[in-house]
Amino acid sequence: MGKSDGGTTTEDVSRVPTMSHRHSCRSDESTNGYREQENTGEPGTLKSVRLVRWGADGKGTLNTCHLASGLPDMIIISSSKELLEEKVVPVVTSFLSERGLALAPEKTKLTHIEDGFDFLGQTHRKFQGKLLIKPARKSVSNLLDKVRAVIKANPQDTPADLIRQLNPIIRGWANYHRHAVSKRIFTYVDYAINTALWHWACRRHPRKRKDWIRRKYFQLADQYGFFGRTTGKKGQTIIVRLFVAHLVPIRRHVKIRGEANPYDPAQAAYFEQRLGEKWLQEQNRLKLRTLWWQQGGACLVCAQPITSTSGWNIHHLVPRVKGGEDKLSNLVLLHPNCHRQVHCRKWKVVKPGLARGH
Image (cartoon, rainbow, N blue to C red; front, side):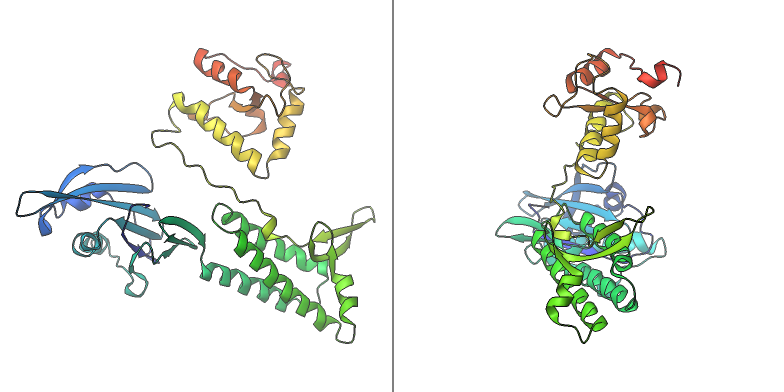
């Protein structure tokens, strides 16, 4: 995408199958002087094809198209606007018409990457030659509309009950956009939500002073925010706080290597390493602590302690290619070097509880 000069985006196309560039190019190989040179499509959602347009002087111009499909939306990116208009759009239209589908004219857009486009709730645009992906304005607007609708529909709820309804909405949206350039937008979202909650609190107590309302509903703990109190099972008072979007850490998504195949036993160590990194970054640290405790804090190969300094990898006792699952009963923690030896030498690792027959 970084070298692309033009792009077309399509949205709301019902049940569009993943397009094969090999099929689409063969259907019209000689149109407008284009001829397929090489098909470099990879299995998955991103496919590419290289086309050469031959001029009268016998010199060819190389053009590349990429298809990214996120059903029911898709984008097609090319190095030439002419290629999109003359070659790609007719092929896509013909491909869909054979299946009883059609592009929505009002939602199909041909644009330059520097002008940007929205795809799957995020805006993709180049600024001074650098591609930035941010939450789309429509996505932010939809979130705030949903939050405000919940607040308006529950004028008499307790703060704790209202927070329980709002937190899943805010958390899910923030986690979806945490890989993009989102920190400033997260801060704006927090401000807009707290403003709506301030008006909600003022309507509940029209005769109270502003500082009284602020002390009752907004508290400065790790940061200033909306909170409520509820009673636990044992009668104790529990403070419930509103989820804060701008405290979600921004973590760039690491792409899977192009040649990696989850069904190849030789690639098992690579995918286990990615699983461990995912668990560490996300909200699965409890699982890591459980595995560490089950093993007594030691590696099952070398019996040396597993610490944050030594590092660790997750290992599947039954490989996923053979039906193994990501359940705790099928997982152990190993040192990175021990993990490599297990896969290279094909050692068998036994979990302590399984060894005792439990």
